[in-house]
Image (cartoon, rainbow, N blue to C red; front, side, top):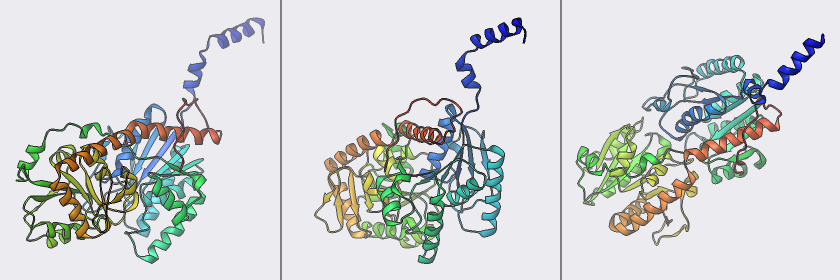
Length: 431
């Protein structure tokens, strides 16, 4: 090389901005896979993270088709940019459709070559992680928003799912549990994986929309509910795990109470069962699927949950954000939503927390918890305030974004995959 050429090279090296070089390097790519964008916490989280993490990563969202009676939450996506739809990825187990969905996911991963695959929900977790292994994706993460080992299937199917999840756990870089109690169940009760592979990252919501909503009178006029009536709101998919049969029993027993009404938000295959159980009850109102949940919660006085199994129920978090107390069956992650102290209430089968009541799966204590709230405005007010303070501090969306980004950064760095320098983030919470 001539002296002039050497001088030119040196000059160029000294004038290149190192930050520009870093920005020119390809960014970490994340492929997020979820079974379907139906109403619920998993879809909310997947849509939010897909959009919110664009400033740090290249993000891809892969999702399937809604089940019968489910409402669509894809409206949470700002656009279809980076979204890939797989029509054969369905909620029920259907071997041929599952195989087609698997090959479609595998093809997407081989085309996109992501650094991280992050799966949500059971079906997507199974197909997505298996495809990620074959596509040689370096980082494989699965979020448990709950589990399917209780309340969904019979004993034989449960054993099969346990075997599948334990096998997949061996090929999973990190498992995310949305509550401490869920993390403990996955490790201690079901032996899905070891504790060192589990990270607790609580889910996050846009809670500001539930604050100071003044729609109580409008919603009550819509359903012909008097301002003085005590309105209980139940929201969810009408499927066996949500135990609408228990809801129907509570409504029937409460039909003799003059002031107590129930607003049921949602739909699903068990709607007919609930209609049959409450056929002669004038205290129940069906709203179907709605997108104006802040307004509906503003009109309600308390939340009711009757489920057989839950991860971290969105309905209860929304209720608390709106300043409402709850009465719930003591299942899954519900204990993580209680504000201490959790103590005996004086009613058999009913525990009292600072923000609501937990009950055995029985209509009598559930209704007694609701009656206590309806007869004591001061108690209901204190519980509502306590719940709002709790969820505002623990379940905000920005905290979810920070912790998931910190987890991605940690795993990428630990495997030596960093393509760009990642900004310093607080460490995620461990199980």
